[in-house]
Length: 352
Ligand SMILES: Nc1ncnc2c1ncn2[C@@H]1O[C@H](COP(=O)(O)OP(=O)(O)OP(=O)(O)O)[C@@H](O)[C@H]1O
Ligand SMILES: [Mg+2]
Image 1: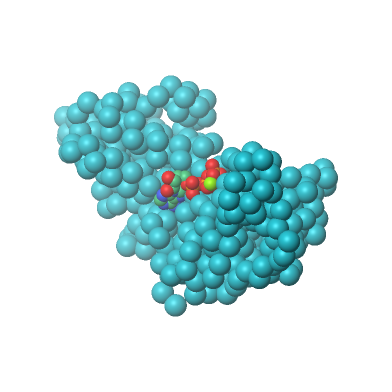
Image 2: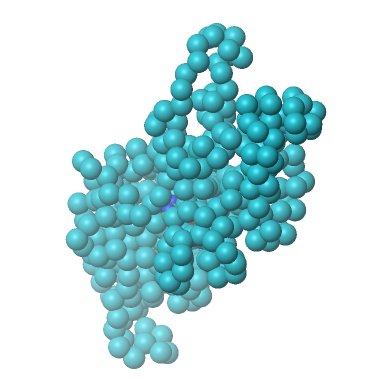
């Protein structure tokens, strides 16, 4: 089956693993529990799951269990009969009934009260619901998908989450890795959002200066894709000129990245490791003395455009030359076979 990833952008191997599980589990009726830090794309993934299921043209009904006051959540989920409580002036179907034949998405399930958790367990086991104030039960055919950014195993230990429900939900766990573990996806997503917001605002698409690319790649993105998305929107409004330079970045990012040694940090990033193996002559690797030209697969692994790839390579080699020449520009230029003026030009461009 061809997987429709419904706008989920990314080419990192960590995300590819998630897609692989998704393609296997989507066409089944199994219950799925999606975990991951805030902003990692849990909702997007659940929508993709529904879109790739046999229920795709039946309803997809999301409900945020953390956003609805607990007194109302039960009637929201299961519906109520007229007169069930003071304001129940007429009968109303709940989300489970609305989702019949399709998928219900119980978002932030970790926030749900223990008393309601029992009722969810009952739907999972018996496939039936009862409206609040109702006298009878109704059969429903609903696939349940839940998500949380909490560690439910800890919640179980702490007595906040029912163990039986946890096991029932966690039939197929899907974990979304944080953005900082997705290598080149950071830049892929940054470009995607930047282009999208610039288009929306009718301005020329902004480019990222090579140094900006390195900083964005080194930042830890605690708010994950959501943080990146909001940040790119901000840049699309505030950046003068057509290139985003480090000066355009907020202190929050600059300070964090400056606290680390950028070059050291980049050497640890998985994406950069690929550049390293691709670029640096493998003469340095003990097992092989053969040089290998980088190829398209390297770009794909990194999720970088040709331009970013070449810029990164150039920046790295320039850094090495400067280091070898102990900062002497004449000598570094010579090592690179460049005229001094051309070399200085390149250094200036990097500092933009
Ligand atoms: N891989 C991705 N490609 C494109 N957009 C993404 C990706 N991941 C997340 N987004 C976007 O980032 C934002 C946050 O994603 P989403 O709401 O799915 O995250 P979440 O994990 O449900 O977060 P929370 O735990 O805070 O509810 C959304 O606007 C979503 O469209
Ligand atoms: Mg969400």
